[in-house]
Length: 128
Image (cartoon, rainbow, N blue to C red; front, side, top):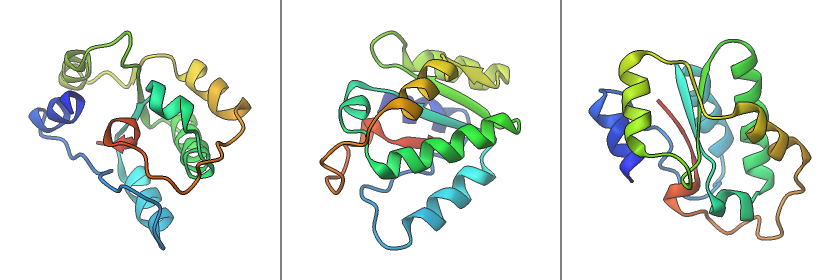
């Protein structure tokens, strides 16, 4: 994705290339999130339409880490461009997008019925 390219061009690591929640996924994912300086949330229509229990778990940890000072970028594909991620990473900006709007969605949304179906690459959580 263009956002992934922006991350890589800033000499950061794109760490969330998992495609399904297999055994042990939480330990791997949460360790990567805890080690990240910035976590990018791909708050896309696909993410919103297929909000799963796994995504809710990830959201809870991301919000906890954000509350403790970890940077969070909430990337909304309808209103933002990948170049914004690149520029904000270059400038050392810790927050992008509306964390409160994303968290409100996550904390109030019921998880979807298609829990086991993998999400497309563009709708995953990523850490840098």
